Image 1 (cartoon, rainbow, N blue to C red):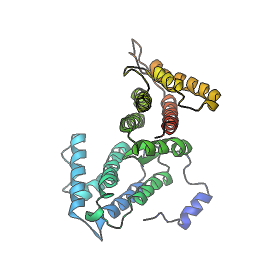
Image 2: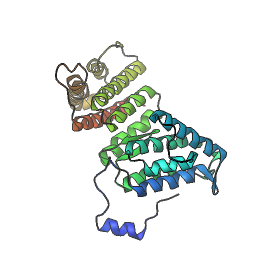
Image 3: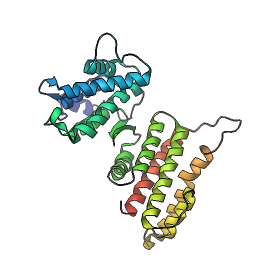
Image 4: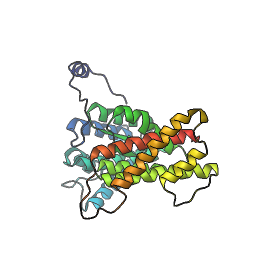
Length: 302
């Protein structure tokens, strides 16, 4: 299970034909087929699907049909993998295609990883997920599978340097609530629900600060806002004293960044005029939230 560096790919790269800007509104046919090849490899033994695999495909097909308010996922008498394949290949809505891909790989990541006996026993789930994400990147599609969900990425550098390390930190620690809230912010961002994105991002910050304060035995009130929680962490020297100047700058960024952004744009009633939150503001908030949560988690020893 590896991506082969074909001659044609090298030539395309030399000619600058690989996309350097991410797309979000379409999923090319080649990528859909590559994903189906990968699914087939993960769930099969030899040249056939096991009974366990067929059960999984049927359950995913039923779940998607129910959520979409349809009797069947595909036309005709197709079932299981055939139905799921037709859907992934032909569905016009890219977000619905990602729904199906997310469910298939979420099950593989959480269940097959620990119990591969009934599926492909020689599979490396880490390699499979690495290939999936590499296929997204190769096609210039701005999504990655992380922590059981497909999330949108806007900058490869920021995703690699902040978002991905943060998700690894949150997934491997006891901060499950922070993980859930940050992923909900990302999900809202992916679907263009930018107001909800800001609210969930702020929740993840507040929860992280409360978890740290509780772990250290610092006094705080459950109703404290992010600003007060920041003051609690700073007054208790979460950051070393030799970083005093940076500490003051950090406090300024935190107080004027995520919480204020949320309060001014998303946290209150809209009044008589519809409020429109621009995408760049949601994107900025997500990146700022990720880097801040990562810094706080590492500073507190998570």
